[in-house]
Length: 171
Image 1 (tube, rainbow, N blue to C red):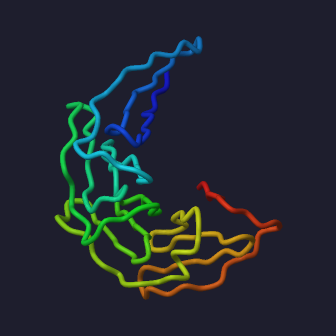
Image 2 (image 1 turned 30 degrees about the horizontal axis):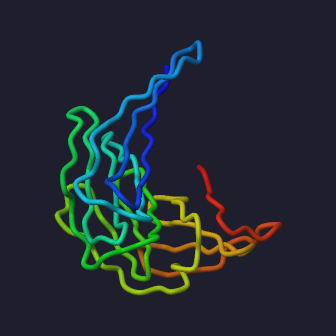
């Protein structure tokens, strides 16, 4: 048996959240879950290691957590400014790196985001994905860049064979 959450933002209403489950025979079951507290557009959603879902931005400075067990949304740590089309990378330890013009880092249990500063080069990358405990990789056309959280540096990574607009690394 498998299970996934499907989340979608809509212009005219709050996010739609559905739990989709299936069994070995391929039978699907779809269950509507409560919508978010705030309507959003072009936001990011991540499944945290503790099982909660975190939704970030969407023309808002708020974040929200969905607890699958209680089926409730609650507000999370607010961002210093509204973000849209942000990219988020989830590290194994639950930290979240958010890139949207500025770079922010959230650590599990923290009440606020840490501002890591401005990095337009990192903002131009797509598909940012952790590749170690303190690094993410992203792509711009056929070039990759690696951002290191420890010293906040950006270095050139290996080139891809072909240019890509919306690539995502999977590990």
